[in-house]
Image (cartoon, rainbow, N blue to C red):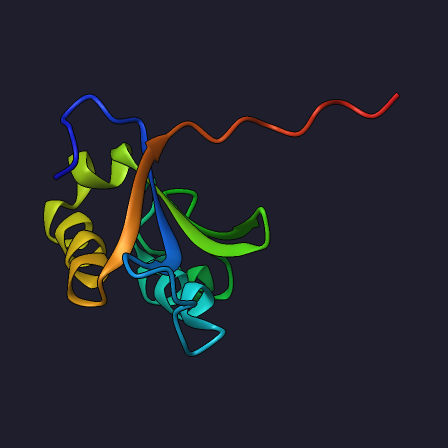
Length: 105
C-alpha cells in the first residue's frame, strides 16, 4: 500500500523473492505506455519522450520506474495502472524522493 503523502513511488525490477524481473526493458516499456500522461496532456510527438510523471531509471544496478504523485492527481486510472502492474508482477515498491544530480563543477 502506498501512503497518500508519498511524493514518488519507485517500482523496482526485483520481485519480493529477490529475482530480477524480465524482460530487461520492462521499465522503458511501462514508461513508454505512460508517456501520454503529462502536464498539459498529450500533444503531437509526446510519445517520443517519457512523461515527467513516469521515468525509467537504474538505481544501484536495479531497473526502476519512478512514478510521481502528480500522476495520481491528474490521472488516477494511470496511477492505478502503474501500481497494479507492480502488484501483478510481485515487484517491490519504495516510497522516496528522487534528488537531482549535483551540479558539475
